[in-house]
Length: 318
Image (cartoon, rainbow, N blue to C red; front, side):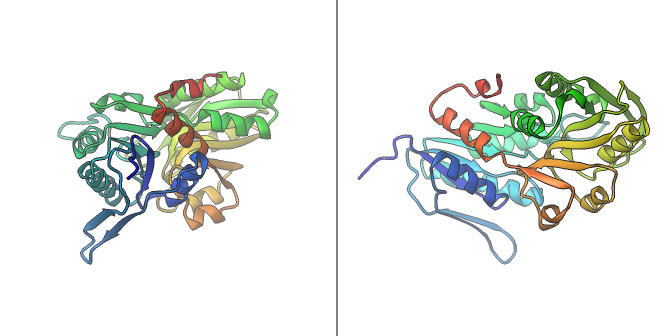
């Protein structure tokens, strides 16, 4: 009988099957047959239906809505693989939920990102592969190797194909995202502007000022997550009031909860571009001013390099 002997196996949960199929297509490996279903009381049951003993297994699962269900699926799949004697288990989490809870914002509050990291580690994962963490220091919450990919190469390629770079201005929608925006601006040799925002209460944002010259320019707002869309749309309005010619948004993770898609459709934002780290809903797919960039090749290439013990960071050096 042939041995797996470190062969790549891909196992997908239910969070983003289209992305998992795309990754499998890129690396030329079909998804491993597995059942991830629920009992009548919504308890999750997992059965891996192929031999994975000695295999290098990559579990593809974003912890997106419903976040708790998809997190439990991930943990149970990892446990099933560990008990099936997989040689190495890598949790591939294109969108890492709970990442916004990376510190104590006040007394008697949790650091949920650390708790989730502990759960994934204790379940049996040997390493983690993720995309554009909300805060880079979350890598330190894991006691196992963690690779944080960047969507920047995919975004830069798209911007170069669609815009005259001489008129592009990269904008951070808040002070906290300046490092991310500066990195993108440097890649395309564009000026940087910042929207200074004051948040009055959770879930609401108020724009205070625009730092930098934006008049007549094509402004590209860059961030890692768009959820309700409030921050993004307020920033777009502020830029247009300052004379920007048009405003686009490039965001890694399209959470887009509640009525976010409807608000974006009615907004002054020319176009919102997101990746498929979170599987787009039918509403997102039908939106006239929302476009989705595929990241399967980026994640697939990272998986190939991890399996071949090659450098992952070199993916991001021009």
